[in-house]
Length: 425
Image 1 (cartoon, one colour):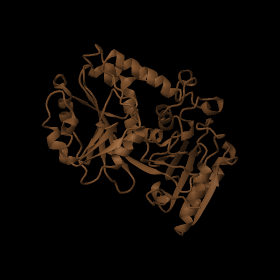
Image 2 (cartoon, rainbow, N blue to C red):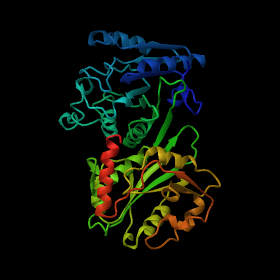
Image 3 (cartoon, rainbow, N blue to C red):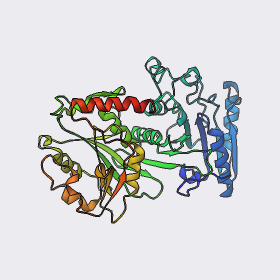
Image 4 (tube, rainbow, N blue to C red):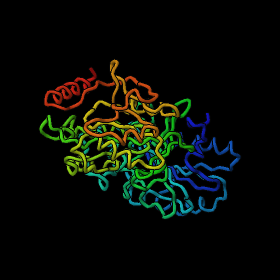
């Protein structure tokens, strides 16, 4: 069975493989399946292909001759699968690993998304000591930030990569439930600048549900070969939380600051870029999000109210944006899936897409370019809801409760719902 993306792209094209390349596959389980699909795709292109492995071949005393043999081959495509990882995400690297053939032009790093949410065990943590402090992570679930840190680290899979060799990451096991985590990892890897693209794949699906991610936080991520709607997600986080008496966005929820939950939802969505508007306690909010692949915009007029943040965000929208998706930082139950449903409605003729709550409408909400002028005319403590009914609009029912944190009682309601939600109730 050939391996195709949702977009219809052949896998060879999706990975950016060119005729005459030597491709080294490294990383976790999934390499063999990926290699089979690449061989099949190359054969359909009429390419002469060799697929081999370093397993039990590249001991130090044997490596030179084997590498020389590969280096002298004149084929349309050479695939070299590096030694296995014992079914884990992270593999122990001996001093002489990874062994990279001099002819290598493309390094494809494979990682399994199935590790996200799991605790690191002995098989998983092999070789991680130079990369992360195992004492700080071995007893907590693996998150996208840890996966991205390991994959991008100079002492990890990219160790020994010669200058000029392109690097692509493949996040395998990208089932629908794992795609949001994969998107966040993709953003982090691309923002780090060590991979030219990241591919999300479910290699065992009948049709591979994959997306090509390219770009950076600065210019927005491109999904697929022909970018469709490119929407910028903006998280409003400039308020002072006067009714609560302290900055609500920094309150703890599930071991993280409240605002981190909205950021995670946005990063896991198909939004082309994610930014946060800062105002009151700007330094503290920025510090709470350190390391997140988001942009920041400081709003000096934040005392005016939400309208000032909306105006500031619209004024700084990148030229490539075809819409802006507004979220507030105090709605921790927003899901990436819901944001994607809003983004799917972004098309010519639909000016506003609201989230629906039992007959009411509100944020998160998506606004098209035809609304920008009106958004920049807003003043006071009002947001985009002031435009309700003025344009052609649609409503997408929310899959989460409209709980936010404006008072101490509201915070306690959110905490109670979080406990029930985390318990699966």
